[in-house]
Amino acid sequence: MEVTLKLSGALEVWAKAQSDAAQAIIHILSEHQAGPTTPFDIAAALLKEKVKTLPEGFEFEIQQAIGYEDWQKLGRESRLGLGRHVRANQEAFGLVFLRKNSSNHAVYQRLV
Image 1 (spheres, rainbow, N blue to C red):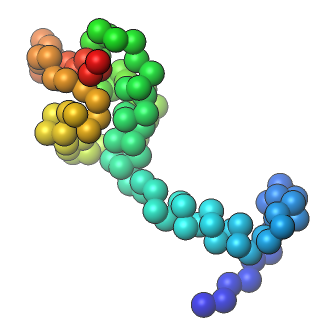
Image 2: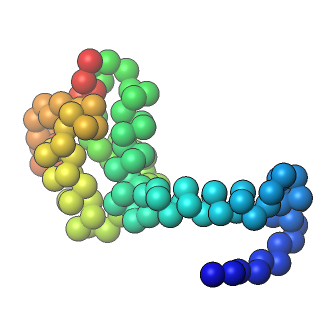
C-alpha cells in the first residue's frame, strides 16, 4: 500500500531532519501500533512504570500510583477490570496485595 502525506510545521521540520523520512515514519507507526492502545492497556503499562519509582514499604491504591488524570480516563468497568487484572497478576506489576481499605479499594505495596 502506498500513502502520501503532506507534512507541515514541526512535522515537516522533523521529517527533513531524518535520513530516510519514510522509514522513520514507518518505524514510529509500527511502535505505536504495537504499544498499548486502549485506556486499560495504557493504565496497566503506566502502573508498571510508576510502581518502580515508589519507595519501599509505601502503601498505595492503584489510583494513587497512576495519577488522577489517567485514572479519570478509565470508565467504571475498566477501573474494576484493571483492579482485578492487577490483583491476579501482582508479580507482573511488582506488587503485593496487602488488604482492602474502608472504601473497599485494594491496598498494595511494591515488591522488594
